[in-house]
Structures are given as C-alpha cells and as structure tokens.
Image (cartoon, rainbow, N blue to C red):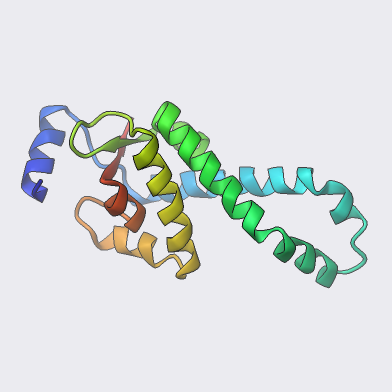
Length: 150
C-alpha cells in the first residue's frame, strides 16, 4: 500500500496521525509505570542495596526480565485495547494499516519486540518516526501499524 493510499484511507475514516509530542508523552508514561512496577517487584532488593553501584548491578541483573515485561505489556495492551495505558491517557491508539483496526497478536508482538530493538539502538527507530510523513517508527514499519488520534 502506498503512502497516498494510506493517507486516503485515513482521510476517508476521519483518522489523523498522532503528533510526536503525544506519542513521546505516552511513551514517558508507559516507561514510568513499568519502571515503578519493577521497583515494586524488587523492593526488598532495592532497599537492601548499600550503594548506588549495588542498585546499578541489581538493575543490570534484571534487564532481560525488564525487556520481557515491556514486550508483554506492549503486546497485551496493543492487542487488547489498541493502546497502552500511556496512549489511552494521551488519547491515541495503534491501528493496522490495511484494516485500520486494532492490531492482532502477531502485529502487536512484532511491534513490542522491535520497539525494544529500537531502544537498544539508541532510539534510532523513534528518531526515524519523526522524519517519516506517517510518523512510523521502526516498530510501526515492521508491524505495519500507524498511531492515530483516538
């Protein structure tokens, strides 16, 4: 599907691409929520840490679990509601390009995995989205999704 066809479909359905500031704030909300959840889960270990270095070591020891938690969170909420909690608060949502409906499991999972990959590469996939006319990040491109105003 070409960019022009996508734009026509969006216009026909009265959907507008979500602006970058809304997406960025939604991401901040999601990251804050997940970080707080990790702290709650590891509260005993965090409170017994004797130094900042201990906290860093503890955080590094659970980086894979944290990535898995982020993928599960992104996949579940995008598949179930078309939006994470941050996106819901910012009144934006994720839709599949072809149907303009809420993504299914495979699209949502793909999006969650490639979001992590983008983070690992210095958030370059997010930067890509700022230069793309449809505001598609790497995880949107691979999952064939768009983020629109709700």
